[in-house]
Image (tube, rainbow, N blue to C red):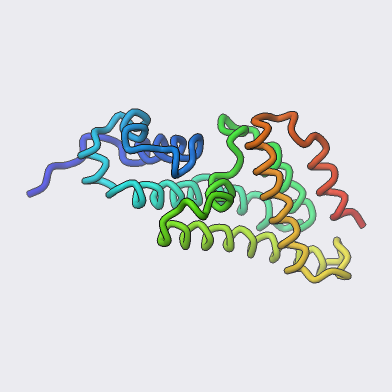
Length: 193
């Protein structure tokens, strides 16, 4: 009969997620994850697996706890254009404790060359899920005549994704809020009729 875990797995996973979010996959060591979670390396390995599996768990936790609620409260609401604007605003200027870290999935995507193949595949799948939600929202806004349909929804969604990726990279390089002032207004101008 195995021992029961003497820690809250969800709380530990959140701390692990934030450690990866702050430092990235390549720069985060098992020792860093021990310090962040308060768990020994043995507990980490027994509960989650190695570093690759820990990062996969962190990405899935991020998708479940951060991305899905954001998509549901913005892109999947009844008013498509208002939802799209809210999503972009929350993505560009989030109001949370980790607002200067950008998006964990976008950050991982920008450093995909450093990721093991299985982890890279998961990151790409998560990014595709977000891109599909953006495209569906744009398509809905076009069908409701809230947005011009002169440009294909898929093409426009890819452009939004590229802009958000560029914004994430710029924020990381300049490490702060002042980097790219006016980005939200510039991106939103694409959605004005």
